[in-house]
Image 1 (tube, rainbow, N blue to C red):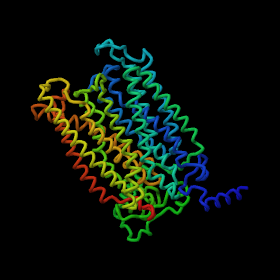
Image 2 (cartoon, rainbow, N blue to C red; image 1 turned 135 degrees about the horizontal axis):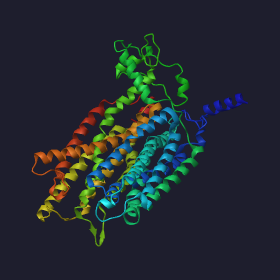
Image 3 (cartoon, helix red, strand yellow; image 1 turned 45 degrees about the horizontal axis):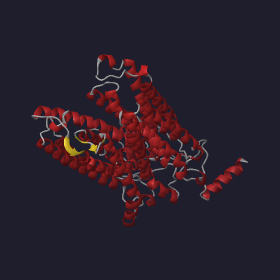
Image 4 (cartoon, rainbow, N blue to C red; image 1 turned 120 degrees about the vertical axis):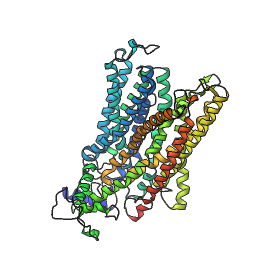
Length: 579
């Protein structure tokens, strides 16, 4: 019977019934293309992502308000706590990538991390709901109404449990969605090219729900309800994700990418005096790799760049893992190292993204926020950013790509690095526009004698252009960045590649704090007035934005240089067309 089953599997594989990219079901059996994967499977994953992002942004968007108004923390302390938590939440995906690639695979990492996530959300909801777990309300930050150590401890413990759960899902859920498309099947390959565009679209749908629906509930109804709704939503979406299990395609975890990279580097350094043969065929390759190929680890050919690492694949008599590595292991390491300069070029635009949630909103507090009798909360300006992203993604995927691919014959319309370059150009424009707008606002404040204090009689909507431009930049850059790091990562390191996306945002968040604090201190010492003061009417935020525009311009020049010398991952000729 087993022989008959094996024959049937072989016949169906030949006729194209089974996937050809090494994906399997949860039991490790080959999966039929017609019964699994594609957008049908992705629909369950996308629903999960919308509610997961709604939960995350439902916390992060209004967190500084809760810390200052409910836990009675100071402005500086609360801002630093928000930045630190956000940075940790965006760095923990490295752990998620490690456990997915080394131990559990992406599916189980998402399931386990979601359970941790839900526990954190439940604790967070309890900490803002039960009277004994939160400080008593008061009008002033008096000693008697400050939060106790146990109350603060529980709240922050819950926050960092959420950060841990988010870190486990972040690099794996997008990679898991992408692997539902078989690149060896032409139709599925075409669908995969637009997957990340619509993935980013769904991410910001969750963002939009958080910035409007949840923020309103938190500010005007109750924090318990404002945290309870996303908690329930996350739990339900996790169940929906589990319902789709029979439809999912899985890739068997190959091993820890960090260990592989360290082995290659150590082996090449230990043989630094050994010459590299001119013929790449003389380099060592694992003869058992074909078995691994069936599990998703593709053989890679030797490339001429970073030749020093090729020494790791030169035989010298000792075949231990720390002395001899295969060509594929060497090329995987090369590929990750090639992506590092591109990753570095994304740190500066990530600092620009941080401005939208902080200083851009702070500017709104100094302007006329009324439409008739209705007062617009400054944080609501982020809605323009989110809507701009959603519209830009739809236009990019449905119009721009279709027009451009007729000219370039590239299935993506333009290359991934070209797409990211457009986003970087937009980031320069954003800070120029922000600087000019702020300069006009300051002149208006001076003209009306409002430098000391007061609301400038100019509508808050003058800030809309910089929010709209930021949305356009995010649609182009963030979508391209996510797809680039996933696409260019070696097959056995997809989760690591996907983790580069949140890492760039995390580093950018920390970098934003460093730049802001440094310039604030320097300008206070060497100028009669600092650039960034509590009173924005007496500040020079226009100078700060001009500095960021200059920094963005030099970062763009750096990106152009590293993009021109970047070597795309070697593929078959047909696949190279997409680059």
